[in-house]
Image (cartoon, rainbow, N blue to C red):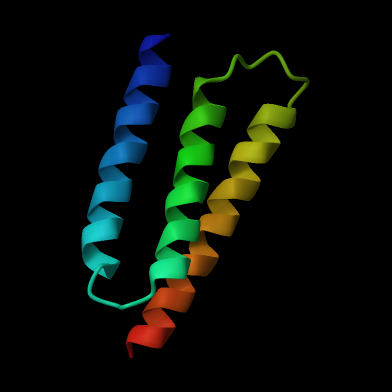
Length: 79
């Protein structure tokens, strides 16, 4: 794995841990599970080789966008 891939994976995991700790107070197990699945999917996409005609990069961007929704829902429910 390239150094950039390792650094990105570590950064994503750290961000996920911080976000998970921040939102853990809201009792939203289904939304938290969905968020974890999206974060795991993103980590797998980051590890994939970038020889996909731009589809891998677009998938990462879409997953990043999708990750914001369960976070927003958990935050909304926690208020």
